[in-house]
Length: 175
Image (tube, rainbow, N blue to C red):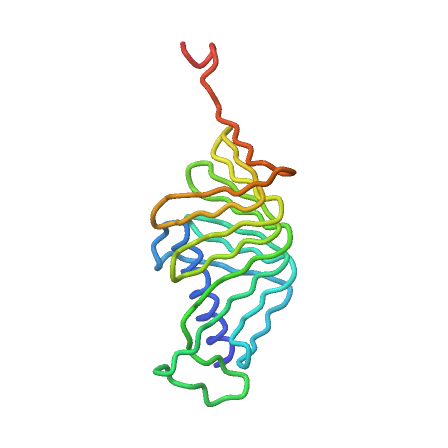
């Protein structure tokens, strides 16, 4: 029971940070489901595998695998159990494989890998990344989104240029 409690706390920390990435309050209820979860004290990682679903009032995410990377916190109390989770600070979250993100305001994203780093609140999407808001879409090689600043940068190449499609009001919309 003690181990389950620690896993739930760590899961809530993960989702709170994910929620923060999408401007959500940290106290919202969150649910993470997967087929398997492993924790490595040596690598300071928690890995959710197989049909990972993160449900949050402000954003939902789906992926094949989600890895939470922790930074050692020397001031945090150490776990006394072999299966316990040592307290640490979240450093980054990496979602891999068929990543889908659904946010407020009809915003969605897809990619193969999404990495969120807490220090600079940067969401980096790679592997055919695409962001959409309603009919507006943008694609490229890499999409970087600084959450706190609500600023983005899209990188392309000569073989895969940045492509943006902006929806203009049609005649039917002008009535």
